[in-house]
Amino acid sequence: MQIARVTQADDELVASLASLLPQLNPKAPLPTRDDLAVMLASPSTYLLMARDPDTVGTLTLTLFHTLVGLQGRINTVIVDAAARGRGIGETLTREAVRICRDAGARRITLSSRLDREPAHRMYLRVGFELTGSRQFHLML
Image 1 (tube, one colour):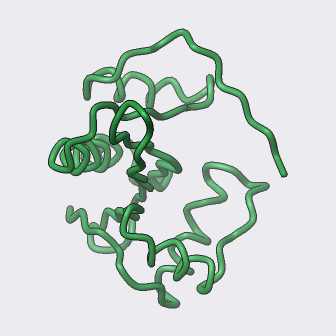
Image 2 (spheres, rainbow, N blue to C red):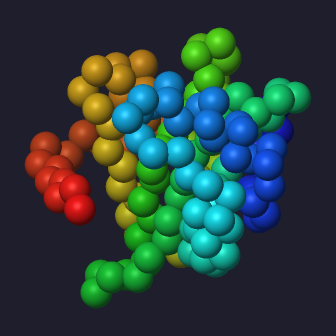
């Protein structure tokens, strides 16, 4: 398996995400090639893809500065249903942690739906802690 940062939007990327994203959230709008190009143009956004040899997983990492220092945020971790249980999500997550550590981030946050228990176990293995804080969303 190979983990790589995606730097260009192309038809293959659009197709891969059209296959993966509904496995996490069937109601989520699929990103267009233009949407992906805007996202990838940001130097603080990392779209990581796992290939074996086809795309089997993805993770989005964003680095951002706050008053308390550089932080990372992991979003949209998806492993193809046919490839689960092979350590792909953990490998993607460890790569995101490495990127944050190398950049000097002081904290990485993520959220995960309550029903994703295998993912929760993996995050704990990687070193994340359950915080007990509440997460709030405002959909616009």
